[in-house]
Amino acid sequence: MTGIRIISLAPSNTEILFSLGLGPQVVGVTRFCDYPDEAKKITKIGGWVDPEYGRVESLKPDLIFTSTFLQEKIAKALSAKGFNVVHTDPKNLGGVYESIITIGKSCHKLKESKTLVGEIMNGLDGVKQIFDEPVKVYCEEWHRPPTVSGNWVPDIIRIAGGESMIKAGEISRETTLQEVAKFGPEIIVVSLCGFGEKSDKRFILQRPGWQNLDAVKNNKIIVMDDSLLNRPGPRLVNAAEKLAAILDQTRSRGINDATNGYLAQNLQK
Image 1 (cartoon, rainbow, N blue to C red):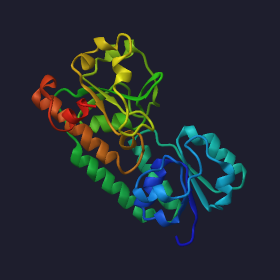
Image 2: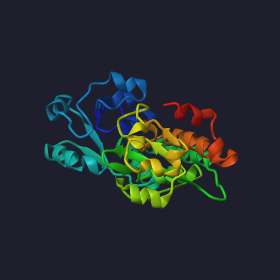
Image 3: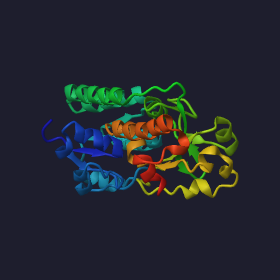
Image 4: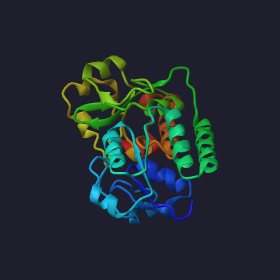
């Protein structure tokens, strides 16, 4: 689709557009769009929930892509200004596939988008592991207040051999110590939105009462790059691979002995 001007207001959409070969057509992205490296060089139009409408207008886009319920109002505001806005709102892994197809179809890249979905599905199939007893995983998306990761993340946890505290398709939501304790996680994954690999597990360790959780007692708190888990795009395969390696060590060697490889590296953070 030669000559089209695209603005992406979500890092996940930016990654999808580049995966579809549309990088050269992307003229504006958010300050959080940092993958692939080429995206860092594109004009920034603000943040995830606070885009600069004047800058968007100045770029004269033919298409604007938004994502999830957090950007519904933004999508409506831009549509009201006369822009062609394509909004996707994946709530589980199937929804992620649908959003990729929607983006591809909007840019006359339907064939490429179907190929990309197939590659992601094959990648996840290659990761899938099943244990007699799934590893109980509490994954945290935000720390104030504690917010359990939902949407497609429970799907990734399941594929990796784990059991999530909430079901796939359920929106990430606030939780309590009581709810987490009742679930009884063996592993806690900290993947705070926007923190990348810089999430600090002290957010967990310093909470009153959380020290009584087995996962905390055993120091099984893992920091994972949120751009892998929290972006509904192609790199969910990478997230599944990393998580599967952690859970495999946990089950095959025993949770108290899972101290090498990726797990050991993360326990030092």
